[in-house]
Image 1 (cartoon, rainbow, N blue to C red):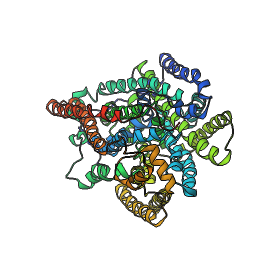
Image 2 (image 1 turned 30 degrees about the vertical axis):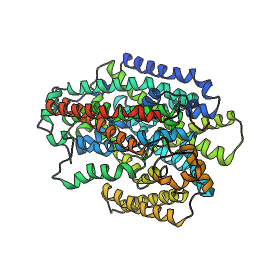
Image 3 (image 1 turned 90 degrees about the vertical axis):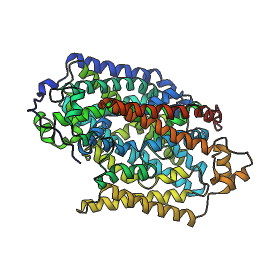
Image 4 (image 1 turned 60 degrees about the vertical axis):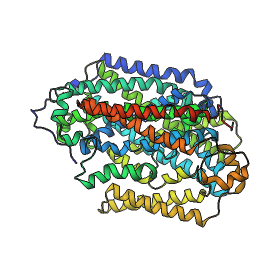
Length: 612
């Protein structure tokens, strides 16, 4: 669905001269960089003390710090660009493609956060050799260290780099190569110096800068003559574009945008930041928490802020861009100096930033730079932890001293940034990159949910899922290159079906994990539910401290709370007070049920990890 708009007067675009940053703007940007580097410098010595400090902040981070860090990491230069792309092409309802991942995030909060912290691993890949046994377990850990830490991680960073290049091309007139060179130098200097402690503290500072800039962008977007204010924005925009749910008269769109994300995508797809069962840098933050209580609290805060607090400033700018730049040709005419290969609907977001006045434009650039550095530094630290701890230290150079691994980690950090910068040149838009990552990770998610609660899943299950998912994704990609184009939701369903059949078959056709490994894992993590009943009897450590019923109730109420807050805020912005009051009531009732439940869950959490 392409967003429709009311007839508009001729648009007056900013000239390139209006886009240039003033001295005040540059002063704000430089001040932001200096402020962001202060924690990295202060904490550099602590980060270099050991790999535990460098990669998990010594397991001493409080809930509020890891929660804000998760939010900051998932807010980067590509995020508002992606939301703008979605709104301009599919309307506000198109955001269900990522809103549906709240189901995944809340499951992580109530089912998995405490289990991850209880495991005590340094990285989530170390999990494989405490959950599985033999050479298959070793292979999965080593393979995923390179597959995720190098390939997948660098594709994600390239997506973020692409968005940064588009923004810099519009606002500064910089070519992509200049932007990537500047960004690479800045991020390598930061991530290689600070370790995770510096990343966490800097995330906290940078998130405030980034959100301030986002709100300012929304305010000035609705002030444009073509928009005429917030109320006029919603009056001029096609109601189908504003709808929070897709048009049920168009079943194919509803199926792709709403039904499949809510019924299949959220549990079946591995996507960084929204992994079924937690993983990647979300797991890294939970493992860095000082207690299970902090892991649960921080992840809960992240999901509320990520889905309920942050989207609307981006959506408002995206809607305003439809009125100001109705087509891609309007963007091309407004910015003739922009590289034509970078023009896409995601370019509309940086185009709208050109209307910010001096000072606020600098604040916005500083905010976007802060968001960019926050995300890239996290991915560099996370990817380096996989390559150094789970591959180099495990297979190539075990037994070296901590200083050696820290040095190798800093070198790997620089190498990852170079690879990511190189990949940036082959990507087109934020939406295309998002779809690529979804297709490669499709079908594997169910394993990551069940492996904590069903003893029979083994390393071969994961190997079969990875191979089959990747093979099907490559087959669809090759078919598309040959002219046989398949709808994204169709390819997703086929990939999930094939992958699930393959890994379930592999599970029953191969030997289970060694009994001694299973017993040790249960004693360490003590998952609840009947899936571990045979092992629980052998472990002889009593029942799990967790309650599946309480976790399930918390998951449902948590999702209702966040969705009610999201839709309630949207209703009030749209001027629909009655609808907003209704959503507020739903929010209050769900929160009233969830808040007393959380202390019950926390009482079952130990104050310290059971594994050093």
